Length: 476
Ligand SMILES: Cc1ncc(COP(=O)(O)O)c(C=O)c1O
Image (cartoon, rainbow, N blue to C red; front, side, top):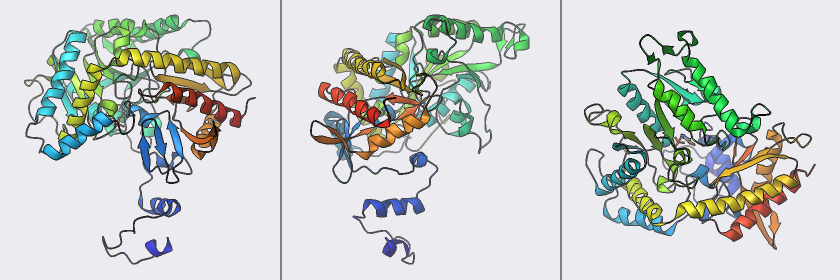
């Protein structure tokens, strides 16, 4: 190591030699990589070398069953043959082209998404692509503000997450993401989400959903509640940004009645419904869009992550024609060099074709139900599990103090994650690691997003590994 970092810097000549050991790499990382991303949430960042199907492999060849799949960006498994082949084909044909020109993959992809939305929601619309989820959220904010004559105030949910660019973090509930950077745009008004496990006791899930809508509706009862001018019949707020199932918020699943009731209030007050499907889209919950479970029609859908199975970055927004037609959103309204890039759109197009040809709805609901049964069994056996729930293959396991199975325990869940990453859990004579992700309002929820292609054998392994990890962190 010494030899690398003590060498006098000579521009690119100072490039470290290849084949550094893991500890040498970590030493370099500590010095040369920004720690402003999320790598240093843990004290010992993990380096992976290889991936296949549901597994990640470290340099020593240890295999780690991944139950989070890059926050649901790799829905179709690592190194998915069909999708990787699409990337290779595009690489050999038209890998780059300036975004002022067209390529067929962009057009076909937009048409598939828009036609599907038209069929499902009865609205003509168009698609605008960008690179990452946060950037697509920014584009959607432009669409909304433009359509609503510059109105810049939004509603969003407590526990909601829409990204960390300045605009997206203004509508994300955590002040933590804004504290150092101040406000660049208007911060959203954050409204309670029907998080039933931590809601008032004595209410059914549906009653609590209804209660949350009524609390929101109360804002419009009088001009003195700060959002509504009854004389002009106009709201000060342009749109409500929702994740149908909260992602970073801990895979919280609302009751079925919730969005129908909420939408009535929005429609009555001219407020747009913008659905963020960045984490829950592309069959994570058993539907292309998770909002399809809830019987409402969105004005716009923002998507990203799994559209390319986590390969070349691509995200985008579908919006109703009224918001995005060329008269109202003319050329140059927004632009990024890499938006609609050929590699991303090619793999996304292949992914959409694969979703059209495969009955993911059935497959995901069946596998999700099987996994949920396994989680319910763990809940019966371990008092640290306060709640389990799932919709399709978006599953949650809320970890709590064992004395009441309710008080959130970030400490226990942190230990579970660390134990999983040790890579020494023995099942059937083999050693495994386990990759888990944590979410939730109290950072105590294991948010499970396995590959939609996970096998039955791997699901059994997942439950066994969780069982072993929970034994290690204490049965009491
Ligand atoms: C629901 C949701 N919205 C927005 C984002 C931001 O997307 P990106 O990280 O690609 O910028 C994420 C990322 O986790 C997300 O889960």
